[in-house]
Length: 495
Image (cartoon, rainbow, N blue to C red; front, top):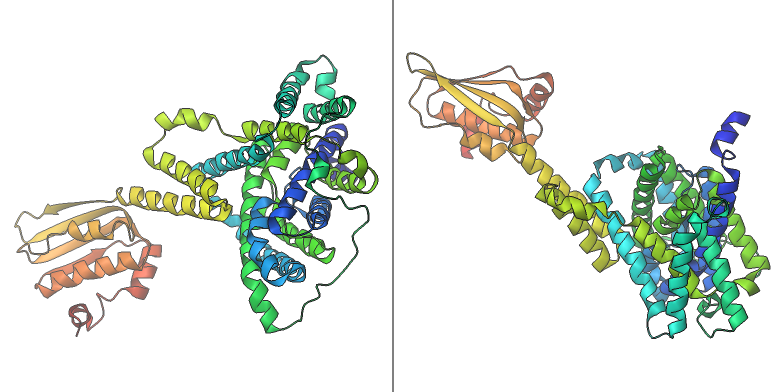
């Protein structure tokens, strides 16, 4: 028991605590900004962020991953808040959590295996671009001091790790935030700070139940939003978990993560917070700052709460330039630069999937649309590729009265037309043997293609014998095929 706790929570205490502090500082402006996007008070995003981070540390399936209020979720809430108000948003958050728990028990997290590497790469690159673009408003129409502070912050982030001894002990993003805050305060610089984004809460949230009528009308209002929030939240969380898996060379429990996200959102909704999910940017900050265990996620949530309650006056003085520098570092570190080099060597279909995912995510700001586009394109290219691996050869008997067709490969919707075209249905012979010992029939389209070939031969007076179907293919052919039915030819002709 103690060994399990140590392996899960306490094997990297210093790195986890410092990484959690860095993440907490970076969470504050983002949570406020996402609240503004959703059209709610900054408290809603901040309460959600610390609630979700603390809860997910215990119930999530991916250690060291940070979950909180996110922009992708905030964008889906805008019309609900505008048309029905905060209480309906809290109700939608509770239902979203319930749907995510159901998804976890249905093991929908296992569907991540259908997401190809090119889709993941496109997803990561798109998020890196979005993170960078989100910093541009802070760098537009500002004084030269902001540019100087941002450049100085980047210099600290990338050069401090080379400082002997200290460089390996303290995360450079934390040094950047503290140093630039001291410089801005001591020099009295008139630049934008965290406090300019909105008022930070100074009290603990209270337990509440959404003040909405419990009837079908309420359900009809919130269900479409809850379903969209649940899908986008799980997509972003599972994709982020996959990325952190790769970064840390460890595995995670995707189905447990689905349940964990649901529980965290229910708790957030009951404490006055908005729905959230995993954050790729903050998770990368956490890992790059040394976070590895559940303790880092817990520390991020606890530090965020303590900072809000006891140090809000100081937090409001942090220059946005410092946090912009940290987020630019995240975007640079998140982008898969190697994917640009491999454009020349990877297959065209792989590159199209990656680029399409990036383009759709960047232009729609909706991760679900981008991932869905990538998955569909990848499936189409895969089906087309596998369809080409089917081959049919034939040989004529010595007396030229019997032809044997040898089918090799996969027969399904993509290769069904090719399967039919390989047979000479008008050849003047007495018997046809179709050898399927090296073929596999996958779907009803494939079965219909076999029916069509067999029945057209028989309609022309040719004897047809189908040989050596494997067990799985025989099962689907016996169930859905009609070529051995008494009235099969009449069915084919439409009578």
